[in-house]
Every structure is written in structure tokens, then in C-alpha cells.
Amino acid sequence: MRILKDNLSKTMKPYVKRVDGVLCIKRGKVDDAISAITTTYGAEGCASVETNAYGREYLIVYAADKNRLRKVQEYYIGVGTTDNKSPSKKTKDTIEAVVADSKKEILTKETSVFKGENYEIIKHIGIISEAPSGWKKELNLVSWHGKEPKYDIREWSPTHEKMGKGVTFSKDELLKLNDIINVIDSSD
Image (spheres, one colour):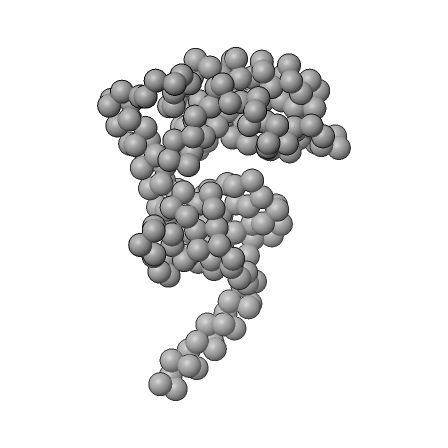
């Protein structure tokens, strides 16, 4: 399979800009990017424009993998620059507003779903602590590799694109942990 992230980043380089950790593509460059993917990968890859539940559009790149499509990467449509000129103040303000809005979207309970490449945060339950760097130790309900969701405690970057090592629990295990914590709490 030729459509790997490293190769894809070379193909998409003329069209994509990383802004505060978010891969962005200008709306006018979407068709060119899809053509580049089709030309480079042929039947091994495809791309489509999809809208999430919040009305945001993304260019999603898929790889054909044993008679099924596997999502390889997604690009936010609407912001970013594709030339070497620095963006204007208005563009920077717009980008910052979109990124800040995306971060709020990830962490609010109404919009608590976040999908990564091999994980999906089904439900954000709570923040245990926060480091000065912005990383947060959180309790979430997470599905790893499309499997049944488990309760998960780990540190996450502000955008939820990076994570630290963590621990997962079934519901029964989490309830047992709660019982143990209550015993500790009552013995003090």
C-alpha cells in the first residue's frame, strides 16, 4: 500500500498548511488536492469532502486496504495559506479564532466527540489536572482501533492530537477502582 502518511505529506505539501497543530487547506485548492491524490495513488487512494456534525468541512483521504477504505488523514477546509507570504493580520485572527473554537468544541460536553487516526473520544467525562503547558490529564470514554469504548485516564495535548501513556478500564473495573478509592478516603 503506497498511501502512507509520509508519502501523503509530500503529495499534499503544495496544498496544506499546519496552523496551530491543525492541518488546513484553502477551499480553492481542494479540487487540485483531490486530483493530486488520484494521480499519485490511482486506485489505491481516494479523497472526499465531508461535513461533521458542527458544519465544519474536511477533506478526508482514504487508502484502499483489502477491499475496504481506511482513513489516512483529514484536512480542515477553509483556512491556511499555500504560498510563502505570511498571512495578513485578518487571516491570522481568523485562523486563531477557528483553532480556538475547535479546541472549545473538543472539550465542551455538547461536542465531546473527537476522532483521531486510531482512536475516538466518545465522551469527555472530566479533567483531573492541567499542566502549565496546556496538557490535561482527563477521564474520557475512548474507543481504540474501533473496539468497544473503555474508560481512559491519560494526558492529552490541548488539541487532542497527541497523548501520553495512560490506563484503560472497563465499567466494572472503574467501579471497583471507585470502591478502592472510597476505602482509602474513609480510612484517612
